[in-house]
Image 1 (spheres, rainbow over the protein chains, first blue to last red):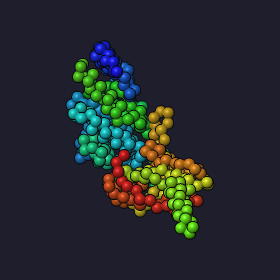
Image 2 (image 1 turned 45 degrees about the vertical axis):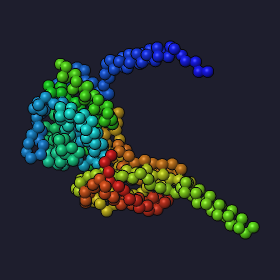
Image 3 (image 1 turned 180 degrees about the vertical axis):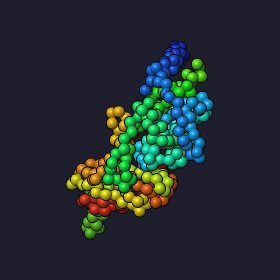
Length: 205
Length: 144
């Protein structure tokens, strides 16, 4: 009763070939970044800030690593831990590539955040994360150059003043060029995929 | 005859109990959690308030014994990517509606924690509502 279709293997083979072509095509498409690509890349003036134990961090001295920058303050209980939590997951997702990226938090509140305090705060999320502070003048220069808005806000909170600040993440390459910005709320997978792609492109160059 | 009646009564009772279990006509606080943080730092906690009653309610305050102060704040991001926080005097929970406290939005802020909050710990929070009165909840500490 069951009529065997002698063409069945041919159909299947055709389908398999079509599918592999389709997949091949899908992967050949140029990669679309999730972050905002800065075109042309914006050269960032070299800076040096302080981290724990009197050590300093110089942007131009990062062994060819990409620097992933975020501005925040340690009194901030909600948004800053969200971004550092994302950094932690991005680090884990990158695997070996995480060694080619420096994860850095720069304070938006130098009056209360000593270098030790920011360093300890960042390190809670991952011991390799770097926390930086400096003088108001040093920080202001960096904020201004990257377009980071920082403003103290009076409040009735027992925490004293609060700080409004740009919550974007900045990607700076080993030449000190700002390549990309991630808006606040960019997910772990999107950020990690973009970084993997950037690292790939750099290796090709 | 007597037996039949008691069976019907039992059925009715079971039905009523089930009905009450699946529908809360009250105000409840669910899915609470707090972020790990160290003593001396500020911390945050989140939950969902569901108001099953027919009247609007208002969260007047939150208290705890783990920080110098316990406040309600709202994080907001503007069109330029600038994040700011605003302290909330009160939070309205409309009748038959819910209000979600979540990262990047409404949250309980612990100012200057008097103890470490470590993953696996449980803390106690008391929420004071205008209508529902005082609600005490157990809040687990966990990473996001």
